[in-house]
Image (cartoon, rainbow, N blue to C red; front, side, top):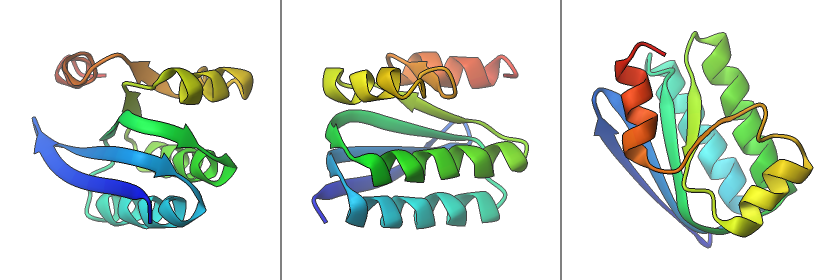
Length: 116
């Protein structure tokens, strides 16, 4: 797997920090991690993608699956720090309209503390 994964917690919300290439192998891993967190009654998630330079179609699929799972559980999945190439992919696929995208963690977590 060419994707580094780190889990931390901020204001009671899991923060997943990714670094590297988000490809098929990494997608399956991330999808299982999101499922585990939601099953542990943590439906609000933030994924930091500042270190992600490449996302393939299976990576997008894993994120969309995670978004749906969080929403079904009454939560939100927010993405922060999309780099230019992944951001372009989100715009082309119009997923930038489905996801809540933030430039940095402070913005994403401030939105949670305001009750959104």
